[in-house]
Image (tube, rainbow, N blue to C red; front, top):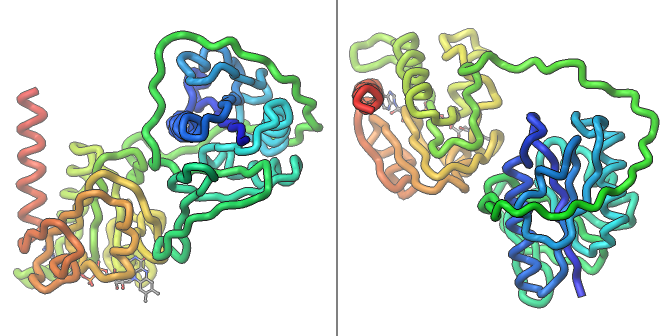
Amino acid sequence: MESILVLTHADESGAALTKGSLEAVTAGAELAARLGAELTIGIVAVQPQPLSKGLPSRRVLAVKGEAFAQSRFASDAAACEALCRAAQATIVLAPESSRFARVMAAVAHRVGGAIDTHITAIGGAANVEATRWFYRQRIEAVVSREKRPWFLLLDAGTHAAFVGEAAQAQVEQIAVELPALRTEVTGTRAPKQGAQTIRPDAKVLFVAGAGWTKKQPDGQIHVEQAGELILKFLAASGASLGSSKSLVDQGGEGNSVLPFLTHLNQVGQTGSTPRHAKGLSTCCHGEEPHVVGWRFVGERRAVSLDPNCGWTRGKADVVYVADAFAVMARVNELLANAASSR
Ligand SMILES: Cc1cc2nc3c(=O)[nH]c(=O)nc-3n(C[C@H](O)[C@H](O)[C@H](O)COP(=O)(O)OP(=O)(O)OC[C@H]3O[C@@H](n4cnc5c(N)ncnc54)[C@H](O)[C@@H]3O)c2cc1C
């Protein structure tokens, strides 16, 4: 008989569990209901009691204290190990956050278990079967294992975040023996508010392709105008900015390039595979090495001047054969009108 532990951690404010943690709670509750298994939730936080509100488990374990205010290997690994030893679960689910991804393989090793990462779904009626993608999202595999405890790190955006009732569970505090702590977070350096263009939680992915920097029908390039149109759209819509490889590569060739783009924005085979409900591609040809990164984008639309581009050959739901400069100028106008009439 399986028993399930969901490991969670507080967000940077310390006042709530992260969205990824709440997604793992949903996955754990669904799995426990399907297997008729016992569900335990573990919390790593400075003050875990308020974070336990409405969690769908009779047993909530927590480690508590200032040491857990910051993400640090030594304290997080010790905390997760203590929670695992206290819960004695056979299946351990956790969000694939940078904080937990860093420590969980070590925790699995310490408790003699096995771990699989980037899990997108958990199925199986009698056994636990975990789904993940291999070879840059081209092959989907279903994995099962005999070894216990089996740790599964869940990719963000694969489950709905758990929303519970306001009741607070009684939290059982677990003692942790911390090793010597040599690392201390002294501050955070982050891009200026608004300068961050990669927004994993955005509903819409906006992809810019190399066409934005190419000669336009008037024989000229209009990179500055392209940058303004794109940034205006991102500000008004809250969309996340992706790019084709050709566009981000241009910086290295000394060509005119959009200054707010880096290789981190690149979507595709050698880039990222983000998850968004909708995607809008502009000035991009829609070649396979790029489109493979759109695997988890729900509804796909594209604006391209080329009626024979990859998008029109079955890779997008809707293709507008049009000039993206004109389309995005009009879209920005409509967004501004909508904002002013609110
Ligand atoms: C091993 C390998 C890995 C790769 N990995 C990736 C990857 O991870 N991600 C990736 O993106 N690519 C990747 N590529 C490259 C990929 O094959 C394409 O070369 C690249 O995606 C093309 O980028 P693009 O469509 O922006 O540029 P282009 O092919 O130059 O297309 C530009 C498009 O813009 C259109 N356009 C121009 N002006 C306008 C306008 N005003 N309005 C509307 N449309 C306009 C043009 O008609 C054209 O279709 C990889 C290639 C290889 C070989």
